[in-house]
Amino acid sequence: MIRPEDKEIWYVLYTSPRAEKQVKERLDKLGITNWLPLHRSPRVWSDRVKMVDVPLFASYVFVKCKEHALRNLLTVYGVARIVYYNGKPAIIREKEIEAIRNFLEQASEHPLCPGDEVDIVCGAFKNISGKIKKIKKSYLVLFLEQLGATVCVKLDSVVKSDPKKS
Image 1: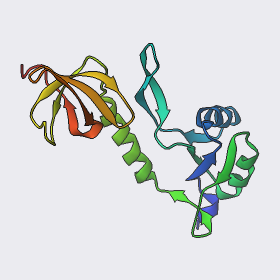
Image 2: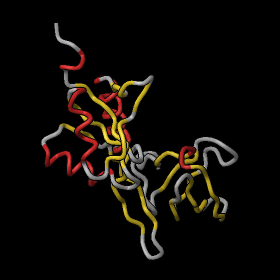
Image 3: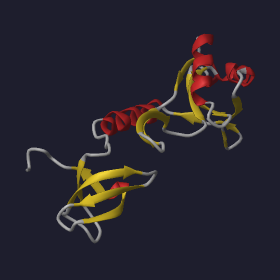
Image 4: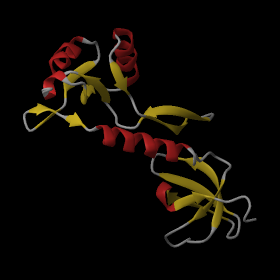
């Protein structure tokens, strides 16, 4: 019978702030199976907006290894600690990893950028479309041509306009 500690299982490492990508590279060099879920997100500078790959879970990297090898990963520069649950290293089931992968795949098909036309799907401006002027962390600045106004709306209250609809 195979004991759980002899099987490769997904675990979670907590990294130093903003060190996820470097930790992933170091784990790759060591030959450790790992995964850092990334999503494309707009980052705003004073002169431009750029789409950047950002970790989905800040300061977390998933690793697939045997439990006895987990402690050795603490020596990797940038790894702060192993995430524990109920006094044992937190185990992530394969189906949970797949669910995150599926979510990222679906989300990547619907990126928003400044200049895009969007429809507001809830709130006071429901069913009105607007053009994205700025993208912030949790909201958008939209120009609503129908009203001749600029408004702020939550990011999750808009969907990209269907070009076939027009």
